[in-house]
Image (cartoon, rainbow, N blue to C red; front, side, top):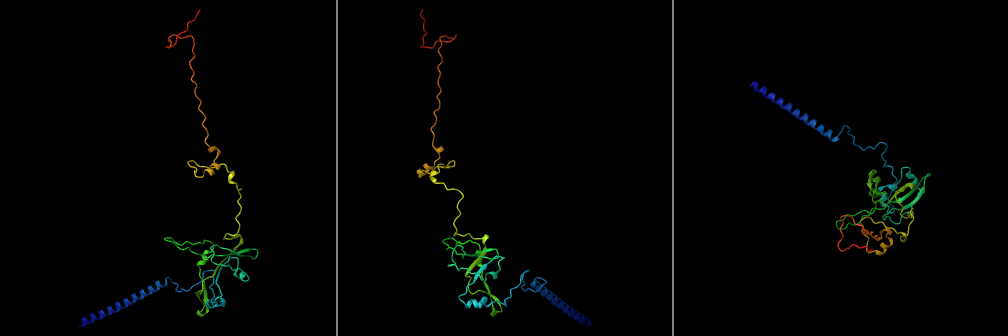
Length: 274
């Protein structure tokens, strides 16, 4: 009997140690899962602005840019304006820009020109991207490919005071897209300006008497009048010069005969009379 009691007490001790080992392994697994979830030693995942930038204080925003104020006022439009780095937004407070008649033009147009601190700037409109209707088996193609076209793909976010200054997408789309550039580096060609005159002098066609035809090109037989007017002088076929004929010289007849020569038949020797 004493031997059996000792064996049972040993089995209980083994069970307790095994339970402790299971608890320790479970705790280490939970710790590894939490470490994998944080993916690093730093547990603070809050947003931090990049170096050289500061976060925008949305608690102090003008009422005219509030989301509810823009939604309730139907006369307000949202404009997107891109300015150069050396031009501050405060310099545009008193700037008057003429409103174009339509915003669906397929080409850009210059609206205004102004000066600021010995620099000249131009105000351009960005045409809205319009897509042609796709036909049978064809894809629609964009009609515009001008600088600033990427602005038409942007959307506007406005703060909302009723929601603790959180940003929400604007209640209406952007009405117009404007680009302000330096006057000497205009990105868009003004189509209204007259084309530059050519440096070469124009020559009337009736004075052009030569024509270049590469080897093997056959002239158009339908337009004979135009072909005859511009044909080169050297193209006209020239008569061939007659080849000189060789003169057959007849052998000279001499009265003397050499030895061994025979008289030809039909010829008689002349007799001399004394």
